[in-house]
Length: 328
Image (tube, rainbow, N blue to C red; front, top):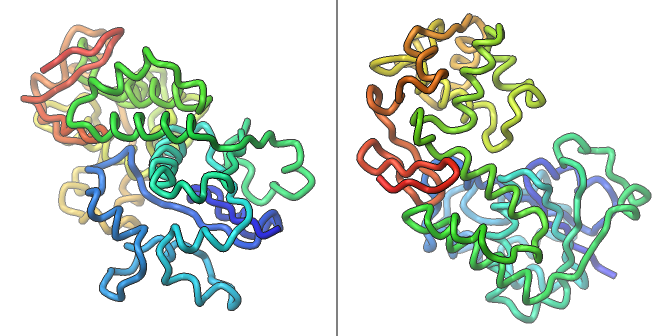
């Protein structure tokens, strides 16, 4: 029985687990920045043409290709999967993992011959925390189910909704049966919470930053890494850094103490930016206290320019989420 594992970047250690002949992982950050175009994703899954830049083909994301598999890495992804009897999908409940899962299942909807091979692991833990602890013995206790046409249909509807130019389809999705993918609904709720609030103009993570600073936390290490305190799980460290910079370096900041030199350090210079984060000592401004108290709206005084799925959020197109979706 030849087995293939497909997983997110947090599941890279599955390649060493002995659970499969080979593991392929995916590194897209669908929760941050503009989504890749359908043309880009088609080329990503296609055969290696020799004209793609490094990182733009599915086969580029292997820690190392064993000799026995190197002749297959130029194939289209569908043709590569044909060589396996079982294809296991390992994605946890994290919103980013769930976005990768629905994207991947949407792709498999165009490969009906592969459907009988697809299996979904129902992970009750985060891959990031498990890492190398997953073994053949421990995996035997992880439920595994067949992927059916129902899972593919649910994934395709969800992926198309997330790619839409407004969040309306995703909100509507919450009123539908999503039980084919058990972890999808809570992931969508977490993602919607990152839309600007109708009261403050800030998303859940940004508001949690303000709450943590108000309670006495004063450094970025706490904001970025104390996930049990932050209690939001959509963004990673340097995405969190970008959110914090938006709060601290705009025309009317809600956060004081973040190094202003970040304005001139290139986004690609992660080390220099990280050093500034580490030495910053943060606090709320008076305006920040007013926003935290729901007495001011951050977006009335600062520029908004970020992406939520296929939705481009700007001050003029500020979709907001509370108990309901509010149009701009």
